[in-house]
Image 1 (cartoon, helix red, strand yellow):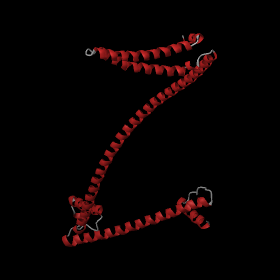
Image 2 (spheres, rainbow, N blue to C red):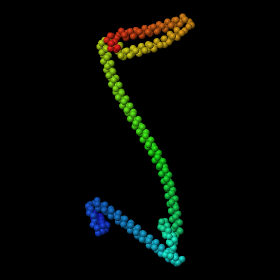
Image 3 (cartoon, rainbow, N blue to C red):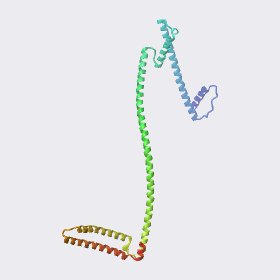
Image 4 (cartoon, one colour):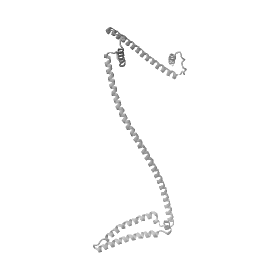
Length: 286
């Protein structure tokens, strides 16, 4: 830590010069942070120094090449840079600017042509990549549009589903309340029926005249009525017969006897019901 603190102190003195160094808390954390800053700053300074040296070297090379070209022009065509016209100077500056833009070694055609070819190849490659990116961008736009449309449809479906669920929930709540009401009513009716049966039994009513017995007897009466229907139809068919009157009379008499027997059975059961019900019970049913 002492070595790091020494380097940090020297760097701060070089950085601030004659100005006072700001106060800071000296601990391992601050020293580590400042030490990393020192290393980064020194690395940057070295890189900048290398770049400056390289630029100086290139400047010296360019100056040497300029002097060589000037001497060559003076020796071959007795032409100096100062004797060029304004147009010539402009052309020469354009040639130099092109060489610098193309990063060529010199201004000869042997340097310009490969540089231009490389630049053209880069241009074609860039245009090809741009076309590919445009195609990808178009595809992504289509996919995005489809996704937005799908999202909108899903939101509408979700809204409809939520509304439908709310309606179904309201219906279910209403059914639940109705079921509860009917269940309570059913229990109440069962209790009343049981109390009425107990009261009727206590008053001397025949057990065969309870609600269940009456329902069973009503079903039997309905069945007997249904049995008389085909006999009546059979009797009506015999009444329409004209040939063989004696045979028709026999069949009619048989059908009448069966019908009379069923009606007698029906009447007897009804009479039994009427006779079996005591007077107080009858008043309760009316």
